[in-house]
Image 1 (cartoon, rainbow, N blue to C red):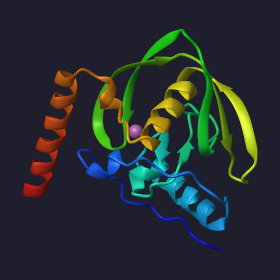
Image 2 (image 1 turned 120 degrees about the vertical axis):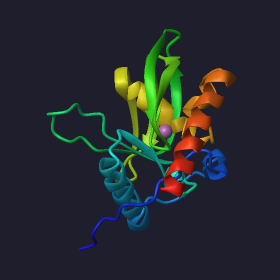
Image 3 (image 1 turned 135 degrees about the vertical axis):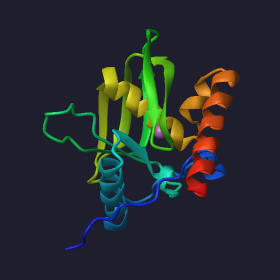
Image 4 (image 1 turned 45 degrees about the vertical axis):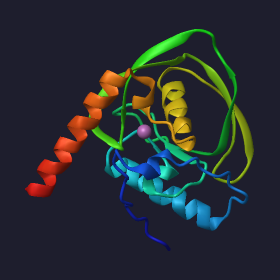
Length: 175
Ligand code: NI
């Protein structure tokens, strides 16, 4: 049996995070091994969602677990996800991202969506999302287009977050 691996996560500002990811042709054991490693990496971070590009794999693959603390783990896998409907109603949520450690800011997005995707087995599925699930899947799907949550903020806020990250990186490098 193969053991899972924790993969290094790309941290902003890293030009590779701007990559537009490519659709997956075949859902095979190689892809499932990647998804297993991504899930392990996400849980270890810890985070609630991770897109493959964040571990430098430009494929349209997302792992997620939005179970609350104390609830049983509920790992989810989304391959080639597409939004097929979104509500006019918007919702604001304070978002973070594993590629922006310890940075959070309010982002407004459609409150509810319907999406279509392939699951872990490669089966086509359609599903409605709201609440944290809707926030998280939209945030992760942005990653597939090379869009980061800070791209939804004003330039002032975005620059402030990037400055803080660069400062943290310099401090870490000099430690
Ligand atoms: Ni993110």
